Length: 104
Image 1 (cartoon, rainbow, N blue to C red):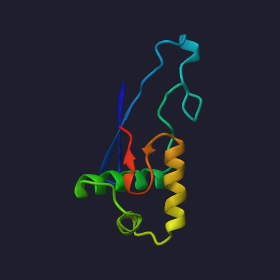
Image 2 (image 1 turned 60 degrees about the horizontal axis):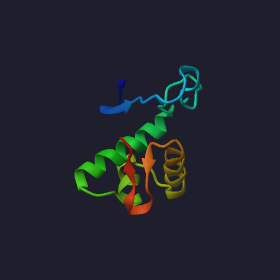
Image 3 (image 1 turned 30 degrees about the vertical axis):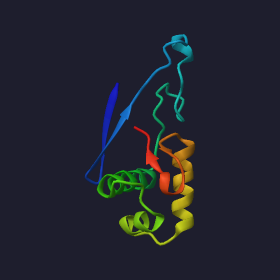
């Protein structure tokens, strides 16, 4: 199943994949326990995700923290780092530093 979500003009696509080897009642669950494998994201996490995805497409490589901060009009590298860590824990972003990428 593919779900599309729009956030400030950016379209974010989620692809739901269920573990077909597991019985239906034991399918992988997202953070909300609803059975979907897509994690729930806050508006700020969606903004970081959209900025990372857009800049990666524009630049052809992973953007720097400075480039992401500029795109979001944020000033704190620490805040951005925490959001990127959370997105990594949720399985939406992979890699670190200059190898960050959005998991599709």
